[in-house]
Length: 347
Ligand code: FA5
Image (cartoon, rainbow, N blue to C red):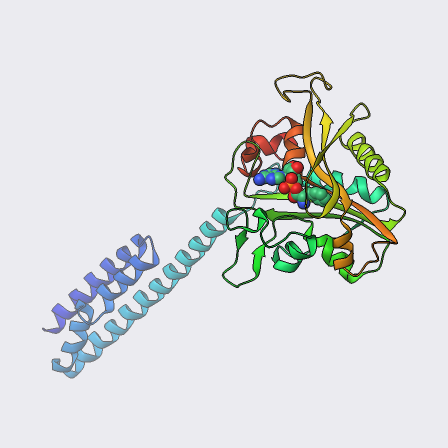
């Protein structure tokens, strides 16, 4: 390569370079332009390599021009690079920008689940009467769930058919909140007035009025001089507070090992008021199990059953909820269907 050729290449590369840099629309394109103009395989580099073969005078002239060319291209590369960086930042800020004049988006406000509403109402009714809330573990042992409750080893409730046992011998998921009666009496002296909300578990097939996991609220009162009349009066006060002043209750004798006598409580139907309709059948709806605490249970907890008497009852929260809100299938309460929940305030 002679000096004339080198000078021509430098002129061409300078013009081509300025155009290429100007056209680069991104930092990547600009880098590609730099490599093509000043990189190892660039024509400019060929000129530089050829400098050594030129005569002194030519080498000075061409060398000077090469330096100038590189300085111009480098300056342009830098200027365009800064420009592209600024543009990228502006674009990013624009995309990321917040328009403070836009109207705000309101978050959906949640609400209590119907089961929580019912549970709170039941518990409130009893705390207003002076009961205190007590709770117990969902995993129970044989003593608290069965034995202390006067449920003998051959009782059907103990079989694998009804109860859900853990792999650890002697432990099961509690089948009723009555287990908390025992825990409370074991830990304190009478008088006892407790209301016990909690989740219980049974090996039962789910249908419109049954679930294998459901919630109960249990009440226990132990004091001197408590009679069946106190039980009945408490249940009547509860039914009126929960379901309105016109509700009546009816007690039918039934058997629970931990009470004597035991009674199943029915409430007059909301729809027909005790006459009989398609909701209730015979005018009454089963609500809960109840009775006078069995002396064996009191003695099992170290209470003197000659001095103290007590009553207890337990109801299913899901049952109360489907009655109160006229929900045709208990399973709907567990479906988390927003269309149902929205009717209780969720949106
Ligand atoms: C009991 O669980 C007794 N512990 C109640 C009791 C307490 C009696 C204190 C005496 C003294 P029972 O198994 O009947 O009893 O259940 C009580 C309530 O739970 C029923 O009235 C019903 O409302 C509800 N219930 C029972 N089984 C289910 C089920 N599979 N799904 C939903 N609710 C149920």
